[in-house]
Length: 384
Ligand code: 13P
Ligand code: SF4
Image (cartoon, rainbow, N blue to C red; front, side, top):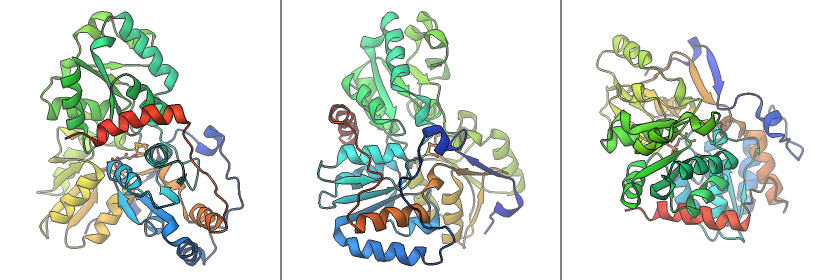
C-alpha cells in the first residue's frame, strides 16, 4: 500500500478564505469541544435515541470519524436518490455540503427537515455561478439570438436558485455519474448547451463522451462583458461552458500524471471528471466518486493505482484495500475544506439537539425555487 500523506505539503482547498467569515455563518449553538473523548459515544447515543426518525447521508469526501454515522454513503447522485426515497424519515442529517442539503430539501416532503451540521460547509465551485450572473448570461445569449436553441444544464454542484433557473428554461440537473446522459438528452432538445458551473466536467463529457471537438466549446466568463465572447463565437459554439471549476480537482496536473507513471511502473491513473481536460486525457479511467470506489473494489490484488480525487476518499480506499497499491495523484495533499467542516463537534451538536427536540441548521428552500429546481432534478432522475 502506498500513501504519501505525511511527507507532503498540505493544502486545504475548496474555499478561498475562512468560510465562516465569508458566508457570515457562525454556529448558533454551544459546540462540544473537539477534545471531548466521549464525542463518538455521544453521537451514537443521540442517533439511537432518534431511531427511525433520523436518516444520515454521508458524501464520500467526509472524514472517517463522521462517515461511520452515515446510514448511506454515496456520490451526489446516489445521495439525491436516497434522500428522495426516505419519506418516513423526519430528520435528514446531511454530512456533505450546502448544495447537497438543498437538493435533499427539494426532493423531500415539507414534513421532513434537512439539517446541515455546519452551515459553513459550502462549495467554492457552486459559489462561482450566482443567480444574477446566470440571468445576465441568458440575456447575452438572447441578444446573440441563440437563447431559444440553448438548453441549460447545471451540475448538481450549484445553488438551488440556479437549478430553478435551469428548470424554468427547459433544462436539467446532472451529476458526474450521468453527465453523458444529460448532455445527450439536452442535444435532443436543442442545438446548444449552456453548462453550469463546472467547465471541466462539461468539456470532458462533451469531448470525450459525446465526440464533440474542443473547437465546439467556448468558455463564458461571468466577470467579463458579454462573457468575453463575441456573438459569432456564441452562434458557432455547441457547448457554452461556464468559467467555474473545483478548487480541489483543479489542482491535479498533467505533469503529476507523467510523474506518477515514471515513479510507479504499470500504475493505473483514475481521476474524477472535475479534473482539467489535459489531466483526464492522460488518465486511464475517469468517473464519479461512486465509480472510483467500484473500480478499486473490482481491481485485481497487486494492481497499482494513482487516484485524482479528494484525499479523504483516497486514504479510505487505501486502508480498505491493503492488497492494492493506492497512492494520491498529486505530490501535495488536497482536502476539500468545506466538506471537512462537518466534524464530530458539529455532528454531535446537531444530533443531540434533534434528540432534545430542537431542529438546528435546517436547510429550507423557498416554495417557488423548490418547484422549479425540482422540475430540473426530476428531469435528471428520469433520464434513461
Ligand atoms: P460526485 O460525488 O458526484 O462524484 O462529486 C464529487 C464532488 O466534488 C462533490 O462535491
Ligand atoms: Fe465543491 Fe470541489 Fe469541494 Fe466538491 S470537492 S464540494 S466540487 S470544492
